[in-house]
Image (cartoon, rainbow, N blue to C red; front, side, top):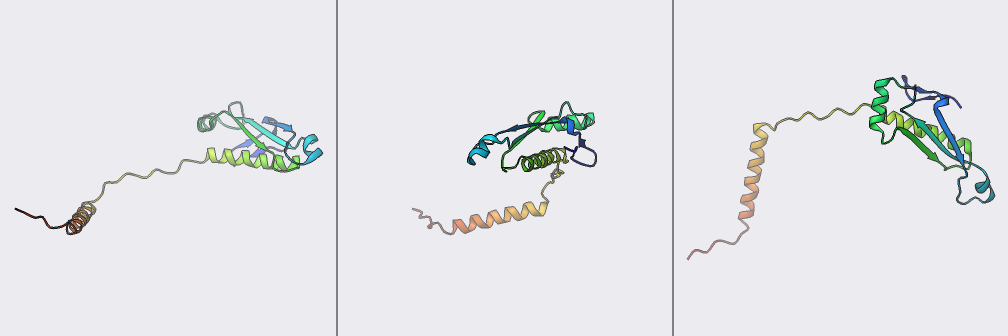
Length: 138
């Protein structure tokens, strides 16, 4: 197969992709029992030459394991399952390489916002106190 292009900067050589083919099992009769259509695609990030050192460290830190494994047995066709496995591996690596979204900068509430909140609390308290029965004094 061809090299796997993840982004403009990262292309994984086909030699680094480890393919395993197994019988998919499940319904399908003799075809399902004899044809090895289930695909397991493994990629060892830690040993890959596709990443520079900083990117490799980033990917390894963000992944639960340094070896990414994708298993596909959706189709009766091995070729189709291979295409799906390549796409899923690519999508997983793209998600890992995506930059973190910017964090919200914490701001303090303004004086007018604080005053409005306190006024609303006071008004709600007053409304509730009017619902109570009047106090009887001896």
